[in-house]
Length: 464
Image (cartoon, rainbow, N blue to C red):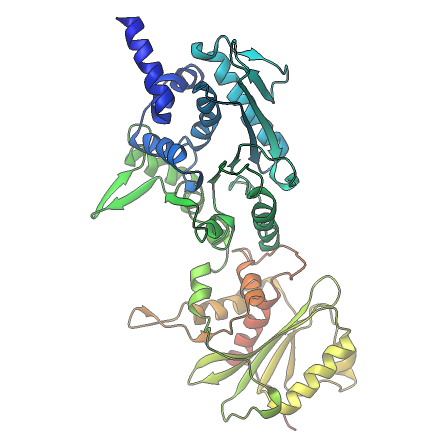
């Protein structure tokens, strides 16, 4: 009877990945973890891998994402239909090697793989052959940044390729580069008819996980540890993480970390001063930048200018005050401009638009000599950044973005649809720090904050 049950389980395991995971792979899980706890979400995720060639999944840490991905290649090998080559990607090479080593350790623990001939002695590379056949399995670990087209495996597994969310978050330019690598290098790797499974943690609402949602061949899911259905709260894995245990974890690690690690909140969204949704809500996609040569208004104009030259660009943000709402009319990036050219541009612009006040960053005194010579327009007011006034200016911008009327959001600042401006605003975190990148250093965050300061406390006036 036991041998009959064992044979039945083997046959079931060959036909369905969920059965392989529950009946075969679970043996290794139980030996390494001390127990195996099945779950509806595990069965469902196994089905997704089996029935979709391309999947993209965001879900909580410790909820068996990697374990399921680990088991997928060995299951295909266990079916003994054909030889298989896989690339296993993680953010770094050593992490990819760790995952492949865990796969090999699991296979060595499972009796059903006892007769497998190991063709490579390396513990972080899998190359083996099924007994008395020519059917082989090869799994190669690859660091995601090192991905290059050329090899064409049968499948690609991407396991947390955007870095652990508990570590340093990637800046937007790094995320854009990762998205390019995935788009141009990784997606074209699998042989025709092969598969690509990308599971992990999103870092930004514009990253490759979100790009995958626009790809018709990808089956995309987002499953937080805790969710609401018909007004009732549930745990995704109740027998492992009860609602009470999830509450304990949230209290231990604090809400922001919990949202990143367990609730699928993009890392940057949780650590940024503003959320992606907040900035999207104040962007008017129909708003057009003005032509200073033919623009006329009776409303006052206010602006902010964050100065840069070599490592960082300068950025100008000009707004017209329409009944208390600052509506952006100019977003100008000055990459690599000499200070004399920047001042000539500002003088010309001020002569045409007559701003009431244009605040500029004078922390490093770049314009000091020009001001002493009287070369700056009277409307330009210097601001020396310090911890206190930076927080005050950021709070002014925040008060406009998060303004409410009758308890409903009603922002009092409207931005032009400038992607670079948006990205640099979003790059600033809760400590008012931002990563350095080729596109800037949070410059538009500070130009907009300076403009809010000019509208609130500016005393300058332009006399033509």
